Length: 481
Image 1 (cartoon, one colour):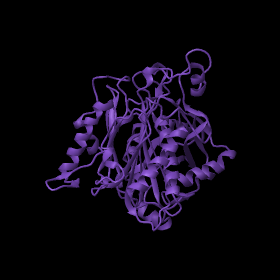
Image 2 (cartoon, helix red, strand yellow):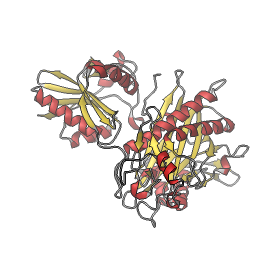
Image 3 (spheres, one colour):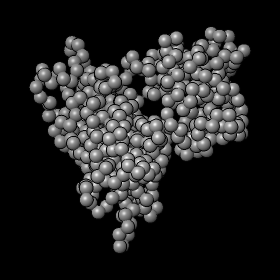
Image 4 (tube, one colour):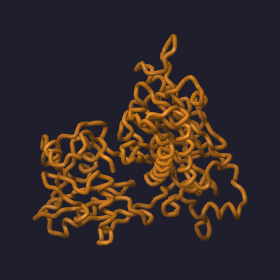
């Protein structure tokens, strides 16, 4: 993996982009905004679904005068939710961001909606204030799953909403060896089931009614039709790249990105789906001859992974269960070592990590793997020294995996006769600090400049972390056992 300032496996790996959510869990709806740099981003759009709900997509047509968008809104509430774009425009206008006209700067905010009125309340949807609040909440590191426009999302509805499971918001990013970045953000609200194209496994399928679980194609063969009540769906997404492209090139990227949707949603592009993909380019990376084929293929891959991420991170809401069961935990075995090494390299950017001035090779350490549906969804590695057990690395891909891995670490430490469970995080990782303290860990030390010292020995340690915060200090947490 190429060296990058920080990898979040999100659309915000593209420099200059931020994502914000407004969530109403009681009404099971929300909206999500992708904020572009102040100068905007070149944008295009490809709509392949038969029942879209959109705004400003004509402004993104080939040959149009307006080339740049200043934000992209993905929202629940069906067509009512398009009102949230007014709030996004107000937020941008207050900051003097927009397309220059003779009288004023006009923010360009294309938008697309999902239909979620049948999940929660049908008389509540994102409004202008919700769009404004989503902008205020925009960060480079944001929650996924049952948040924002994914709050009321559902999938696998061929047999009706009563047999559906939760959809949500997901994200992913892909890098070329030269460092070009392509990211994706998807709101997954499909009538079809969700399939992992790498394994062929159904990640989110219709809940069984009678008899054995039936896949979407078998159901359609038997029924021969899609019932009208479920013709109110859509999967909407944004793909982004830092490579400078014109609108024609971005339109090709958007079309190719749809292949990722088609590979993961079965069926897709039905008459009742509004499947829409926006493509944006921040243009911070200039290539003499950008390879549209490669960028489009990576955009499709990012869409695949963002869709899978959205359903895997979704949590139950409004009586609808999550697609992915709580993770199971097992110790790392010898046969897992190659996978652990590859996972650490991808997640941490190197095969070693440094903690308290000590370099560790996680692939050689004891640890635990979280699995959901037979697929790895988290990893924790440990190092025991005397009466101390230190959590060296922890990564979680689905809700609940991190807590389950920490429980396993605590049991392991007690079994080894340790009196303390330790871990070290960095000053930017506020979400982790809250998570660890909720689990009974206390801040034991703050080592100013420790990350700077470690960077001298390991230059690939990024300069910035979550929310663009500079990474300088280590924070050690301890739990007495």
